[in-house]
Length: 278
Ligand SMILES: C[S@@+](CC[C@H](N)C(=O)[O-])C[C@H]1O[C@@H](n2cnc3c(N)ncnc32)[C@H](O)[C@@H]1O
Image (cartoon, rainbow, N blue to C red):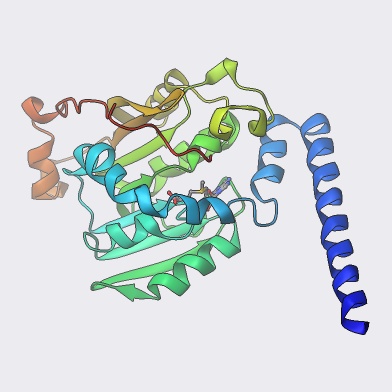
């Protein structure tokens, strides 16, 4: 009898917390700037947890058909992975990298990845950092050879993503490359991402290309990423190399020759649609 009343009290408190979270979220979306409302939404307790499990099984297919063709020329020695979630990308990247700096806005995501991969995996050292939702302040300037972000920035408000693009330009070494999967809904998106297909944000590819250029990043390619019923975009960018050629690592130096600059087109994967979740 006593345990029944404890159970009711627990259910009551869970329901109460959900109602309070819902009210806070609605108020945030109405009252805050789109940037701050997006940050409040994206740190809602447990918001991404179910999704982490739902999409685990489709990752290998995504990697083979959409991701790898776009990143195969990257120098993976030190990778900044933004928003690893539960670590499905991190596990794959660890087979290619010597060091991964994993940065996420939610501690529970970092905890999931750490529980899965620990401090090192397949000879790759993995660091974990929680950030404030728009910064890479824990990453020294010009310290990473690649930036990687899949299936996360698609949810970021344009001001949040703009802040991150400036940070990508700062942390990339000259000649380093970035892979950024983002929304292309632009002005068609509601400020409340939960009203948009797959919770996509108000970013579009023109904004991303402009922000890259303004921050000294050369856009090498923008690839449509079908995510039924919408189409996202992946932007590949490179930090400009200034100064003498001696400072350029040989592999990147070769990949900068003019005939290699445009990565050949990857046929969009039309054989399957995106995940039913976000
Ligand atoms: C849909 S999950 C995807 C996770 C992972 N990239 C994957 O492919 O499985 C979105 C991730 O973005 C993180 N996130 C949300 N808003 C963020 C922000 N403003 N800055 C950094 N990470 C954020 C969440 O904590 C979550 O880990």
